[in-house]
Image 1: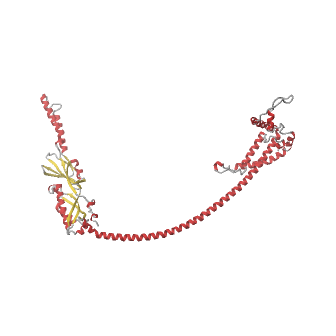
Image 2: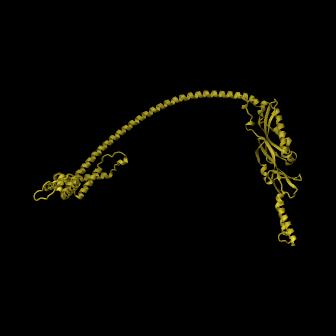
Image 3: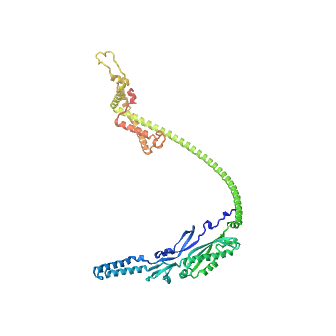
Amino acid sequence: MDPADFPAAREQGGSIATVMTQESVPLAEAGETLNRSEQRREGGEPVHAICPMVLPRGRSLLSMLPVLLLLVVGAVGTSIAVAAGGGVLTNPFFGVHYWLLALLAVGFVWWRQGMVMVPEGCQALITRFGKLEQVVGPGRVILLNPWKRVSYILNTTREYPFNAPVREAPTRSGVKASIDLFIQFRISDPVEFVYTLGAVRGFEEKLSNAVSETIRSLIYEQEAAGIYDMVGEDTGRLLEQLNQQFQPAVELTNANITHAEPADRNYRMDLAAPEMVRVAKEAYTHEYALQLRKEQDEGDLTRELASLRETLSGIQAEIAQYQAQMDTAVERETNRARALARQRYVQAESEAKANAALLEAQSLDIRAVTAAEAPEILEYRYQQQVLDTLEQVADHLPQLVRVGGGEPGGAAGVDFLRLAREMVGERGAELFTEADMAAVRGRLGEVSDRIAGRQEEIQVLLAEAEERPTVPSEATTGAPRAPETSGVPVASEAADAAGSSETTGTTETTGTTGTSEEAAE
């Protein structure tokens, strides 16, 4: 062990010494000064400063100077008035009224300067030419006598703390020791405190000497090994010895030993050696117990971890089994849904084709009836379509050159219109002959019966189309749209085409070279 490892408690920031001060302050600041304590540095060391007594400053000539100037000004003004030959008592500026006001101002200022306010909890000593005349308590005191003044103001209710450290004192075995004694005192008799103890300076010196003497006697009675036991012990006998020396001026209300230890580092190390061995033994025993407990806990944790891993493997196996069952169920339901969708798609497609065939047959019968009733319109439409086709191929006709004259009596040149008609397959024959029209009119009753027979079925399809929901579009669902399965859109379109054909009574022919019999069918 190293003695440097055992520093004194005071070296680590222990209690600091206390000093008493007495200050000369104005009467208005006496209460604040008496109730204030602060830390200072004296001789390079921090100390705790207390002020149980102040010396108040009385009235001075400077405070009376303004009113004294009134008297001086009045005297000078009166002299000037007398020199000017005017009446002194009747002078408008420095007459009798001026001197009355000046004397009243001087008296008021003198009375105000003689008013003394003693702070609460304090007592003031009033003297006359240094002799004590009166001791007054807190409140207002008026001193009209110019020879009387407040010499001292003391706080007689507050308990002031005083720390008296003894740096080194020998014990019974000759080992140096240091002790800090904390004392609380209260001034009980201000007259005895000032004139018997010698005020603050005398009381501080006597208290320090008395504490030092008493503490040294206590230390000398102790063995060096038991010096630590003095901290916090009963100090009633010590407090009684100190009160016998300072009563009735000062009453010591509390005394407590806050610090006690040997001053020598080597001796502190020797005293601490057995304790350090005991602490080291306990620390080693505790560390060994902790090591055993750690090994036991690690074994328990290893077994518990293996059990948890086994449980985790079982859980993962169950999860895999359930996942496989879920995947199988999902695949089975997906296939079933696809088969059902395909079945419904085929069924809907078949129904749509049947409806389309029905509507197409109805449309063809309606066209046949229309053609039978108004063949001129079909002829007109046919000729208009031929002209539109000729117009489209007009720019693509080949360049023809005719060599030689034409037929006798005929026009010279090339008949481009006839050539164009020949190129598109137009022969100039009529679309429907009389025989064709007769054949169509002969079957008109049969066609009308077929149209009437299909009308009820078409109405049912239209009613179902209004009740069924609209199939979502490809842009909304993001999937390719299937062909119409219910047959409703096809039926609607066919019905619209049939209605338009009945209204206009016309139809468009898709062939240009077909016969009238094919067109009628």
